[in-house]
Image 1 (tube, one colour):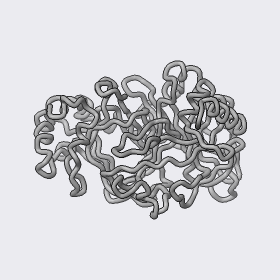
Image 2 (cartoon, one colour; image 1 turned 180 degrees about the horizontal axis):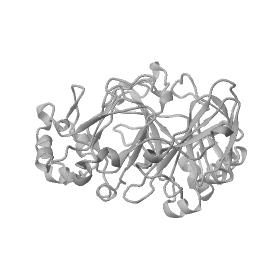
Image 3 (cartoon, one colour; image 1 turned 180 degrees about the vertical axis):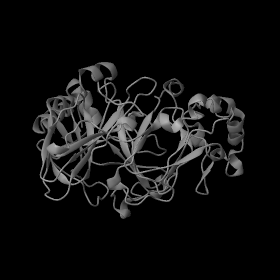
Image 4 (cartoon, rainbow, N blue to C red; image 1 turned 60 degrees about the horizontal axis):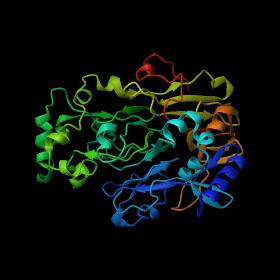
Length: 416
């Protein structure tokens, strides 16, 4: 866009034409140190569309206004683009132009942006044990902390990859000196940090809530990840799948004068949370029905929920509309949405889960639903007489008054 005025005009027109819903193009992100799991529906010919030196594409970012902090990145890497009448403009620009309409008056007044994003993360094997800095730690390098949530959508996990287990945290009794010695052995091969952690088997249709400063080595299920609008991390594992990890990935988001300060690096870890003997009980989540709506032809479930340090940072729901059915869903905040199965319509826009996507190709599986539309109510229609229509939608902070807590699934009767 050449001028802010033209973005304002396009965004306003697109919102009015879509009755508060913007259609978004796919946003692909490569990672140089990972191997794609090939479940994003991206054509295999395009896995290295950014060039082999950038690594394979193993992430699709959804309704994102967040920059991907990769080496050699493109200027707009990570940003989602809205498409209307053949014109493209970033979702970030649209929200800056129409803030209160797009994200709601309260969120706009507090953040002046969309402070979250989500992604599909798709890796063939495990990734290195790492953590995301807290708000205080990230501020030291001018960034923000990044808590995140996981959900493993069954529709995209027909194959589980090479290692469908995730290491979380550290075994009770692990000391700071144990991990300090691991970091000191970085260039001696495998530094052994996983010797102090525990792996949990991953199951499609379940999830986890992961606060900042918690070590985790995600396994090979395709993962839907609502998270805070940041891309910070510190990797603590020196080798994964027999491949060395550059030490730069340990220190890329810490102050330069702390690069060799092992005590500082070890203190990035939240020791009480990582060595919690009840770690699974405090972080594992399963879907919870929003209400008893199966008889009305649809099922809405919480799939990512729970508070982090007492705060509601993000959340996500999965809506299934039965063949031939329709429903109107009202939410208390804006959301980014992606289709994981079936075809139909959301409001005036057609939606469909694609079978195969070429890099740069437009799809009809992703939208941003503005605050105005979400709070007024959005109608979903399933145009198939045989297949369900399934969508995932994620929300920003402080949206819900009825969001469940981690552990509430144990007291819930699952529907569907």
